[in-house]
Image (cartoon, rainbow, N blue to C red; front, top):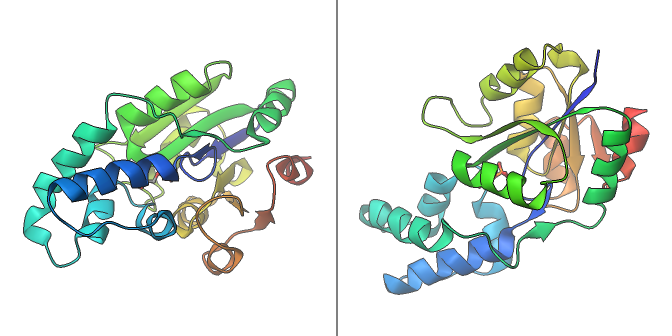
Length: 213
Ligand SMILES: O=C(O)COP(=O)(O)O
């Protein structure tokens, strides 16, 4: 049976925080609201766009729908020039392809945008299951989407490695009964990843190969 690795997208495969911060700050400025630093955004993302908007709005919740629309208008529809794979990701994927792993993505980014990024930036890689946030499936940390991927690939959850950079990913992996690999190049620190169940912690993408072997 082929082995499987499921990757989170933002903060794990893709360094996307600058474009999220730039676009959200632009949307906030349009509404005359306070903007935030890139480091603050690292703690605002993880649960999808709706939660991101709630995090930046704080006391102005009546503006939620307007800000979601403004942000989506600015962010959607084009891939962003500051968003790129982290160093070492292509080398890791090359090796996983050589070893004939199933590759999958599970993100809380909107489904369309998730698929667009994977199709464009990772066009040379055979990602077989790619899922972002959809209206008909609970988002991470629910394990449901991860379990559906396991079923689609006909692989027991306990054989699957789930790679991510936030507590949301670690919680998803553990509730799906998968092996959780927490990465330190993304948005959060080792303490958070361990506290939420990381079975392994890696400092750089190629370190994952030592865990898989
Ligand atoms: O967009 C988000 O909030 C998180 O996206 P991710 O699940 O790919 O990290």
